[in-house]
Image (cartoon, rainbow, N blue to C red):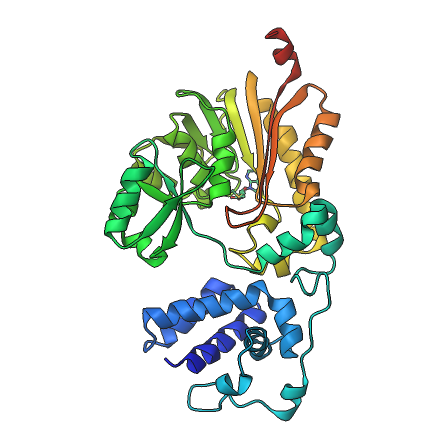
Length: 394
Ligand SMILES: C[S@@+](CC[C@H](N)C(=O)[O-])C[C@H]1O[C@@H](n2cnc3c(N)ncnc32)[C@H](O)[C@@H]1O
């Protein structure tokens, strides 16, 4: 496909997404219809689509319309390309620009529009991030780096790096997360590589790895991953020698976990019917709560535009409820670990402050906010232990 035809394909896919179709579905639907497209075409079109979704607001301003065509025109202008070289009207290329399209388009206004954030969220975003708000907003406009988690129960980072290099996948050790490898090139080969196929590496964001590494784990500890989802954190905890039970309000999300655990060579108890009475207490209860996902919007940009103030308030109520309910499952000297992939205070430090104010028996052992940057997504973690037990230990 020509570069222009790829742009036209992206326009058509973006139009479907703007009509409400999920991005992945729109991309696979297009690929099914366009059998002539090679893997290089599909990858380039995917990049166009996701780049446009991350910057939907500012590109619509530059392109003069909130349509697939407007976004891609905005992207072409933003990249300093001549639109007439792309919108040529040749076969498979986007039709040539109409007169009104030439005149439409403007510089995005400073603040939320230029940073591609919804207006309603901007006050909370800037309150949460303070002086870092503009940098974080800009970081969310770009592509996410690719990281692997080395299965430390099975191998080590240097061995895996060498094995990946043999298959044309270049990686570098993450500076601060000892299990993480940054993928420098060959990312598309990972899923078919031997280290991946033999369970030596998993795809996992570096900050997500740092969240689980921050939890104090000793081999044999009983750990409940209460919001396990696909089980990325369960697997990481089990690789450190913990006895892990995975639970999720939507058990279907854990469907692949038994197979993933076998593949990684670890045992995970999947609690598809809830936590059975008497299974508590646990040494660690991790609640990786449902959240806005604002720290990971580079990977799932649609979430940035679909989130509403009402949904955010609903998520915050669920987060508070999870803190309250799961704290009962923690052993007397155990740890309640709270985590989000959010950068918003109302989902992070303020949830912990409210919980501690309402249940005076807990104290904070650890808290950290990871920024969205080239070292990983924006995550938050806090570890809570019971005060009384901490005093007894003195
Ligand atoms: C952030 S995701 C978890 C991601 C997962 N821990 C990982 O590392 O891949 C949050 C999960 O919480 C689950 N969830 C939502 N409400 C819940 C509740 N009340 N109790 C338990 N799980 C809940 C969702 O189904 C979702 O899978």
